[in-house]
Image (cartoon, rainbow, N blue to C red; front, side):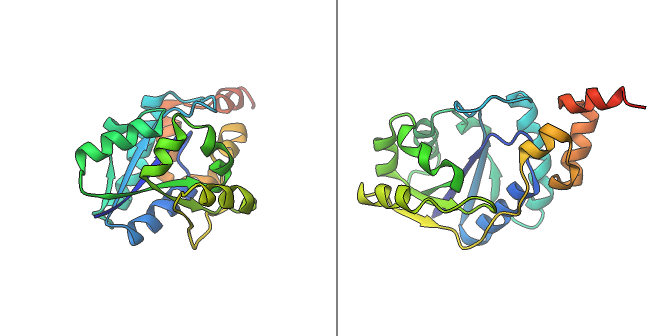
Length: 195
């Protein structure tokens, strides 16, 4: 069984996350998703809120893709620990870690990166506006890392565009409704005072 492991900080989940999940479901036997804190970022919504938003985001996809599963129990800021937990659930699977092109340069600094990269394949997801870091990819390959670039590009949307200015065009309607209901982001409170 080929399993895509897609961890995200998703603050909030966007149409870009949805596009990635759809593509993964079409190319892997199982797409396993979790939400975690990124040790390299600060977050506006807490982990529980981001998990709820991801549940909302994937609910509509699960009607079309039965091979999409949310597994919060494997969430850990250290991907190596997440991988070990995934191996305990699916002991005979081949795992591919899905990372955005913007994370390639960070991979060698991750917790016990050498051990992690020996045990897992990497799938790099291109993103509009970001160059493919060929030198970093070549360095990883020279270390024996199995790394592939996905043959699609994520739409030019970002979580930060919503967090910073409320750009709703980057969100699914269900996630936007959840955010409104829960009053999750600071710009909302600021905009309430504008007549």
